[in-house]
Image 1 (cartoon, one colour):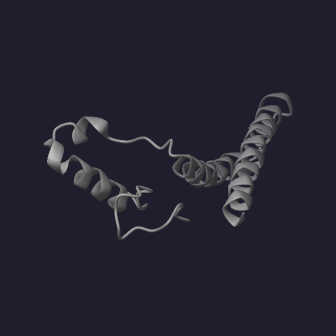
Image 2 (cartoon, helix red, strand yellow; image 1 turned 45 degrees about the vertical axis):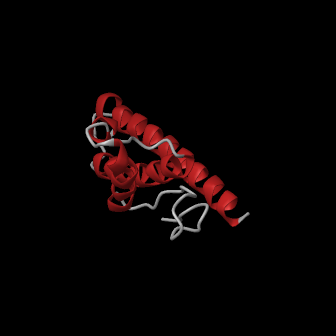
Length: 112
């Protein structure tokens, strides 16, 4: 229940951040080309919001299991080491695998 609320909060914050970036960019175009006096803060604020959008978007994708994996590297390992390398890749990327066949991981979801 708490994870669902956090997931909904991530989506809302990402949506509001994206909408803010669009509005700020439109304001920057209006002030530069129509008013002749560009707003200096538009670029910096858009960049800061884009960084936060990246963090929240990555959190959403990781929770849904849709984050980009490096499959070509995992295909080079022998079948016996393939599961081990995938788990090491997940651990080094900052998240633990949700696989239930590992006895030392007993969580359904990992919060970042």
